[in-house]
Image (tube, rainbow, N blue to C red; front, top):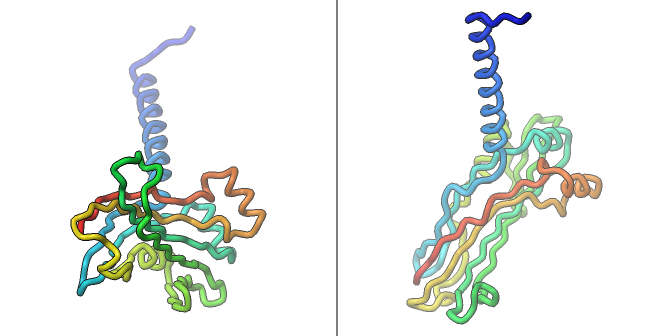
Length: 195
């Protein structure tokens, strides 16, 4: 015969609360990993258009382990500027501008530093968080001349950052198809722009 005492109910309640806290903690940790767009805007300065954007980048444990074992990771920032047409439902909107910027993040085990490359520009960092923070800040980047946009027209802008899995070695590309740990991308962040 099983007897239930107040102390066993209390311990059962504590076990349930502990399990619930562990579940919420793992859910929050999984939600924190990834890429999130914090802000993005296109501004006009001296007649030209510039992009200013901020991303929050958090690698999964799998990607961080691969990076620390010598696998370079390639990231792409994509921006689309579209002029919506009144007679379509986003099917045949005219892209006015497509912008792409590529980063390469690698780890040098000899110097114990992370290296962030943007074209021919390279910068070394002592910590991964510092490298990810710099990669996540797009300070005014030239986009286009003022003549590109028609005065008084409304444009739709969309930006995102993603891990470029096509730059990974073939065995890792296969893993990327089957695992969420290898598919790191932000949602498209959309806003309107009027000249």
